[in-house]
Image 1 (cartoon, rainbow, N blue to C red):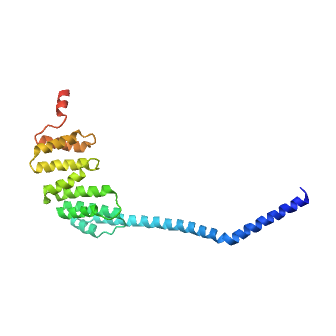
Image 2: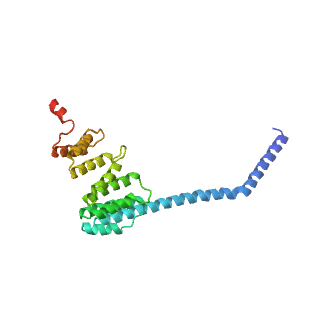
Image 3: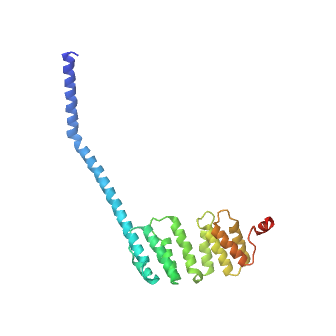
Amino acid sequence: MSQTDSFIEEVTEEVRKDRLFSLIRRFGWLAVLVVFIIVGAAAWNEWNKAEARASAQATGDALLAAVEANDDAARIVALKNVKVGSAEAQVLADFLLATHQVIVGEAAAAGDSLDAVVTSSGDIPEIYRQIAAFKSVVARGSTVPVSERREALEALAAPGMPLSLLAQEQIALLDVEEGDTVSAITKLNALVLDANVSAGLRQRATQLIVALGGAPAGAENTAIDQ
């Protein structure tokens, strides 16, 4: 390499360095700002996670302390006063509260607790609302007219609804309550034959059909096979 070429290369390198330093002086603060933003965001995220863990633990401790009270009356009072940190935690508290209210015979109060879940403005899974609506009908029982219970259950029994089969069972029980055993047996046999029915529900439906004097679906075929 000639001295001229070497000189030109050194000058070019110096120009590059000058340009780099100039860029750093002009925009270096942006790099520092980006670093601070990244570090700050990471710290904020970790703080939020820690807060969420602490809130969840505090809620869990409060709910556990409430259900460990001496009796159901004391548990009800404790659950009414418990402070929760999220909409889903409030759902759990309301379900627990309703359970103990049913135990002590407070059907209307239990229904109100469950209705609070149904009408909650919190961001909770829809299945929670449907479970609460179902349990509310069951909890209130005969304190609500059959027509109102049937209307609520029919909405839950629609095809594709997650609690459809359980709601159909309750509708059959409403038929029994009104003395329409034929309709009840028909509905219960439909449950027995449903491919998606659980073993427990199929057994309950079969036992009720027999108790009502009917023949469970498939019983004839079983007898022939034997």
